[in-house]
Length: 612
Image (spheres, rainbow, N blue to C red):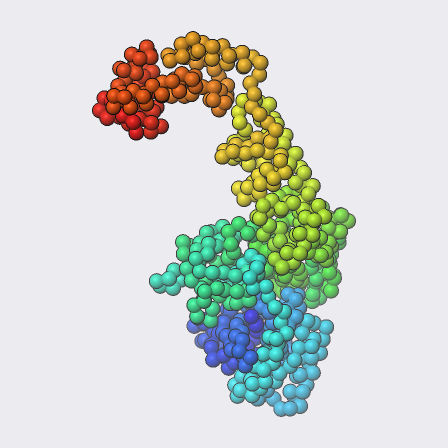
């Protein structure tokens, strides 16, 4: 992804069209005014065989917000400077934005050389080089071109090809995909389509996705890049995503497409900022934050000072009035709303921090560790609060790639700092000790209150621990593996727990069983509480044949055996025969035969039963 930058009317769009044959100005108003207003897109196949996407941004100061929506996901910049005007105000502001966003690769196209002589061209080149001095583009090549005559375009394309070879390789297969949406529209017969630059992980047709911050769920119907259908979108691509189960009007520029549950919106960011220009920043300043393709009003909480002077770098907490989606390592721009001016930029250190008190040395130390620590240290810091969190959320918050995690996570587990809760979640060792103790105490208390129940309903345990379903499944797996708990289909219990009645309950049960033994085939009604009855059934001391009708196991077995033998001997059996043989009431006889029908021991035919 290569984005243009530069002052208005320096020929960015004309140069893109000359390079690609594609007019990046989509809007009728842009064509009438001959001035780019919104983002435009084109692509180019380079001599080396690779394709690059080009994002053309508006240069006019009134449309700087649209420019910012386009440069957040680019790999390199094509800074366009008109030779007849040289460096202008938006040249400097765009360069400052590029610098703040850490876009370290680029080329300068010194355009409109057909309008100047060699002496003027040399002066313009010197001014551009002086302006670039000290910026991320200080060593960028300067290529003289004329978009109108075509002069220098071959050299510019060759320079782009060389530039592409210097760009760091992306991790194409791992990570959580993020698409910062810059357009949402509809195509007849297809439905909603969103576009943007894909980062961090791949997308495929049929995949379920989530649109944040709204939390909309959708499914990918199809993918395109450069107007061609593709079977997989990889990080770095500019992608059009056709979505099912969502309306395009519910999606706007600034939203983020990702996989369900991987990321969450935030209204609070810890960050390190650098002030640019000649305007200082005061504590609690009202600013506009630009991150990805989103724009959000915010307040700036300075953590170590009351005012930051131009050129200063410091720690801040950004309080947003609307949610954005960010991960550690994301870069952003801060602007004064009025008069509109870029004043600072920086990098997200923690996308989901607690509220901080100012002038706290421990807070600053923790932020420094998050910003400068190793991947393992950043993961440990992210989990320091002891909460279990989804693996994807931890890596996003720590700014750690999947490749880095493959080394960092085993090291943290090996030295006892981290516990993996299945494949989906992580927790610090101290956090796991607390969860483990809470789980043990919760189950122990439940067993004390209900000593005859097999265990506590698992869903109730999850809710009491306030865990999501995915994290709870990991907690269950680890607690089971460690021998802390035992489980069945619906309940959890302490591993050494055995339901046992107390002395009074045992006496009550023994009296009931003795009374039933005196009249085994027509026993008296039960007088047991619910838990004691459930325990007796679980232990096989009673057999339930109907609501409120129970038999001793031996009596039940004798009656079932007689029914089988009677049918085998005479072909069938009736309610009356069963009643008369055991001297019981019709109620018991009917209940037993209906019970055997349900168990598929017998089958009713008219008024008789046969073997099923």
